[in-house]
Length: 107
Image (cartoon, rainbow, N blue to C red; front, side, top):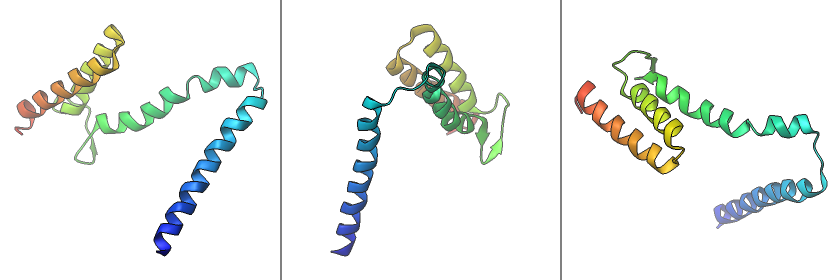
């Protein structure tokens, strides 16, 4: 029973923390340079998560044409640039990854 109280308390704390930023945001006016900088935060965070996955293979840096993740990532970037369609980018990227993995690694 104690575990459930801990889960509820941490859930409530997380909720209140996020709510505080939402309620403060209404009354806070950030400088223009800060607002412009915040525009790039999602791209920076996504890049920090995705790029290490694309350039490593078996825990080692692999920037060769034998890395199916890197090649599929390049294909996905091309699709994203051309179409601006998130669903199509994910779909084509995953199909490219599966096919390249089958051809390059053999399964």
